[in-house]
Amino acid sequence: MSILVIGSTGTIGSLVVQGLARQGADVTAFVRKAGKAPAGVREAVGELGDIASVRRAMAGVRTLFLLNALAPDEVTQSLQALNVAREAGVQRIVYLSVINADKYVDVPHFTGKHTVERMIEMLDLPATILRPAYFMQNDITIQPVIEDFGVFPMPIGDKGVAMVDTRDIADVAVAELLRRDRAPEPLPRLTLDVAGAEVITGRSAAAVWSDVLGRTITYAGDDVAAFEAQLLQNHTPAWMAYDLRLMVSGIQQHGQLPQAGAVARLEQILGRKLRTYRQFVAERVTA
Image (cartoon, rainbow, N blue to C red; front, side, top):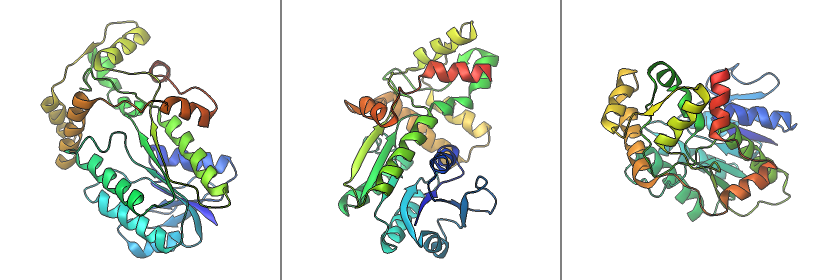
């Protein structure tokens, strides 16, 4: 029996695989091409659109981590993967969703993840649903703009976002996977907001970069049309650029704040404090 990680080569999935391997877990990485997993980690080669390969990967699996990357057919892929898991008798699942998935009803990938959540809930699958907020690591892509032009260009507005480090997300996922995998019986369903302990706005993010860099960084403002245009200029597919535009519009309208008690619960799971945005920025500038 093993833990199967779907989404194993991305930012979070790769950290989950590494974390499980460090804990001595029997982990299998689901990969599109052989040779993508870390040394010593078993691979199952396939694609989510290829049901036969998903069935092969699920054979003998005890616990599943499901992370589906942003894609036009994300909902279909996720629902099919969960159905195949049910067929295979998998009764220990951790699914990576997104915070406030039920509020961002006009954002395709948020609504898609909420649809998957509804399947888990209505079929009462024994799963942990992790709902992460905005990744701090999203800002790696804009670091050159910040440093070269003195502006923080991500239009996240002033409602507030509880940004979270992807390393913390992965560590929570590993803890939940091991908790479920080691339990003698399937555990009750659980939903966790995975968010940072501080609330960041566009202006406060710029202030953090200013302090760390030792010069003034200004917030570029809330223009989502300009944000979409910049993504297109950087060769982001049009469907994805529009999806992300709708996402930042939702962030400006709703913010991304965890439910009461979520941070304390996360720090109890981790046995330590969550990383701060200032720590992340300082690491990036040093790097």
